[in-house]
Amino acid sequence: MPKKLNDLSGMPRMQAAFSGWKKSVSLVKVTDSIDADGFNAPIETVFNFRGSVQPMSAEQLQLKDQGLRSFPWLMVHVQVNDTRPIYKELNTKDIVLYLGKRYVVKEKLDYSINNYIEYHIMEAAQNG
Image 1 (cartoon, rainbow, N blue to C red):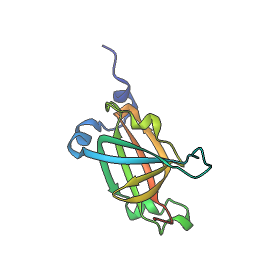
Image 2: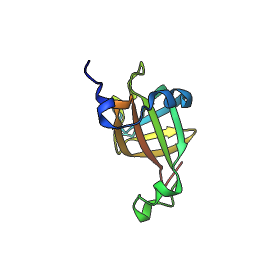
Image 3: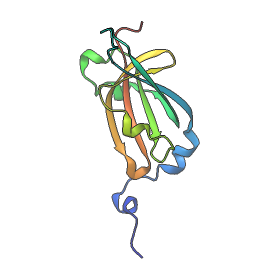
């Protein structure tokens, strides 16, 4: 019988662990738009999904650019087979709102072989 790809990869099986971490999470993607009068009219798209959000560890922050380490960073884990695929619509440089604060998506890591996508988001310099 042929082996599954993740059996051959040497990667740990994350599905069981990830299942215990998942909760309902809501992110709002903010896209700049201009209305008919030429004014800024941002479009907010709400994404409700199953996943987890956690602060980045001090060790992980050391891998970030020195000028960015002082900002709050979060890791967002999104289940790939969620009904509304946020991972298809959220990319680096996008602006998101989480718990009332603005964040910039700095990294998108594809771990779809283990059924999740990981985002590294950094709090925007101006929250207002």
